[in-house]
Length: 305
Image (tube, rainbow, N blue to C red; front, top):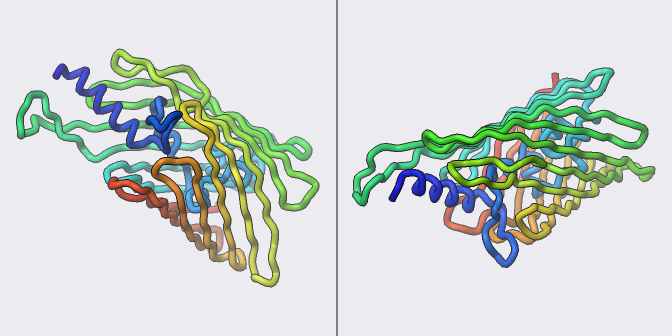
């Protein structure tokens, strides 16, 4: 098999493995650079990735740049993602509040275990190669009356062995804080950009639209706070999906989370927990994936500076 064709087939297989669910008629999604769909932060993951309205920390640079407007100090988040059996991703997010509005930077790097190279029909590999995807986003969010608005610009680069491709995309978002205390509506458009070219073929970015509503309130009888959100998600290469999440936080110290992703082939329930103390946060999330490739585990550490 010619080397270029073999590499293209490997890239196609990896895209199918990373796709969050089926597209129309149960077929795999057609977009590339699918690590852009793997999320940021373990809090959101524990709530089923229902986060477009709740995002109000450094990870808002990924979920909804308008959420940066809610940041009141400098925040920093690191996350490690064990996705399926051989896919790993590292992210770093930072947000900084200023009198001119709030700024955020988000980095994500997805990589796989080394893949053996077979160039001829043989039981012995001739070597190995790597696959990776890197995205760097700069974003800005600002509060205007009852609205938060934001925009982000990201640079993209992916590599497969000695081949690579680069591109760019834009995120936009808005949040509306209603007159009902704790009720927020939000929407975001993610990964809006031109096609990227890999080998001889062009592919679409995983552009996604999100709209959602969240509700937060204190519950003195439970000695804590609850937050819930429901999102509708429109990927350009698939049917609409539903995300729902619920969080209970005990005395601003310990959190329990549960979520569900609807209309996915292999994803569904999520669970999470978190603890915070003196400006330090640790969060963990588990995603149930119904196939033989393993489950998802996210670990995040955050600091309020």
